[in-house]
Amino acid sequence: DSFNFTLTDGNSVLPVDTFNITVLPANDSAVLATNTGTTITESDTVTITNTMLNTTDVDDAPTGITYTVTDITNGWVELTTMPGYPADSFTQDDIDNNRVIFRHDGSGASTASFDFSVADGLEDGATASTGTFNLNVNVAVNEAPVLAITDGAPTTVDFNATTISPYDAGGFG
Image (tube, helix red, strand yellow):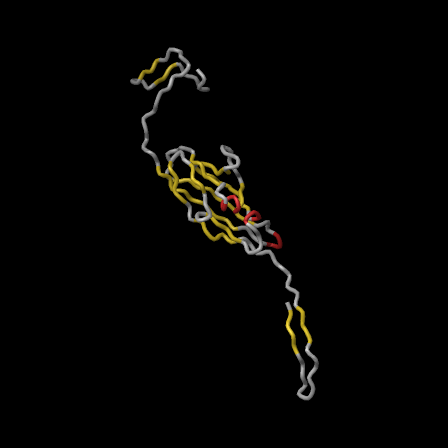
């Protein structure tokens, strides 16, 4: 940037000159703008959108803003690009493009959550923001257990003693 100026001593005026200013860019920390949490149904999934979780940064694109996931309870985070595999990190771009989901583990717990830190690379002393994404769980009605016998072997069920025989810890008959 620059500005023009003139000098005078009251009698004479010097010609216009330019004063140049060099502004060095600094890395601004990412700002956690939105963290509303959401609601999920037991054993279900929910897409985490940018209206639920959003971080902004004036000097980085959404692909450069990375969330690191820790301390997950009653489920896991995964990416639609890797279904069935827990993810320990994702970007704001992943959220913006509806690729981040939370999968509830089916437990009867009425809450689930994960802690996170979010950063833009931490250049030039920028610091990470941290938070907890909370999910309220709509717990389904506790259904009666269902006994499924698939191996064709004779099985005895004694409901008085609450035992099932034969016992197979691997579940393979």
